[in-house]
Length: 298
Ligand code: HEC
Figure 1 (cartoon, rainbow, N blue to C red):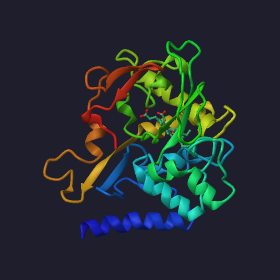
Figure 2: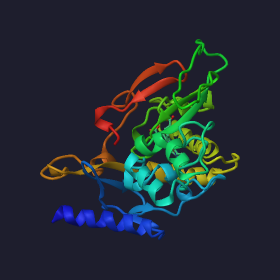
Figure 3: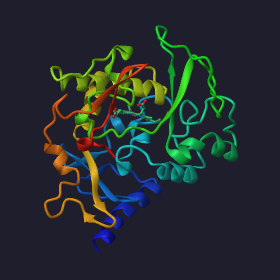
């Protein structure tokens, strides 16, 4: 019965989305079904997720918003199944399907036909991957001598990497922003997150990240999000905690004293270099973090 109830809520949300109705508010406590059971995203402000803020608005030129790739129903990321469904519903025209970084490569593709789009967006459809193209730094202490990219992005000055959107939730526990930590390094003019400057450094890095994300993913001109919008985006993101709350076999993960679900994360004490993530050095940007088990993100 319980699983029937949460499936019904999830289904209602999906159906409304399919009908093009605007759902502007998702109250805390809504279950989002996934193959393992269901997750929940809890917001400490406003009693839920208000989908009217700048995070959900098109701030660039290609109709994408942050939510195009960071969906409340998918733990603030996207699953391959979610992307595949959007491809089917829109014949590959949903704003996530843009050649700037949604297709396997941004050249040598034909997106004028359905079959062409199906092929061009195969990594996004089947793996949920976005192409992150990053130039080899001028002062790199290595040389790229050869690139063998099966999708044709073989440039050796700009390297294409394929990454699933990191969940824009549970961000309080970050010790470096982005997969390679680049939004917390001088490479982007941002600040390394330390015990002594947390959380100011994290908040500033996230504000800067929102501008870079709009410029790259949404092909913006750098004027938006404005400083006020950056603040709203960061406030929105920082209020979110996400975790699996129902397991298919186990049932509720927050029952009988268990600490599953998002609520225990809200009050979890956190200190950089006490229980923050492990740091490695990647040649390109320096600090690279892997979430520690206690703060693992979906
Ligand atoms: C086209 C898809 C796409 C859009 C649109 C998008 N993102 Fe992302 N986002 C990603 C991907 C992919 C990554 C991981 C990239 C990496 O680490 O190199 C990411 C990473 C992030 C992270 C880092 C989280 C962490 O754990 O380090 C944050 C925060 C974030 N995005 C917020 C935003 C915001 C805010 C916007 C809107 C201004 C936005 N994103 C728009 C795809 C997207």
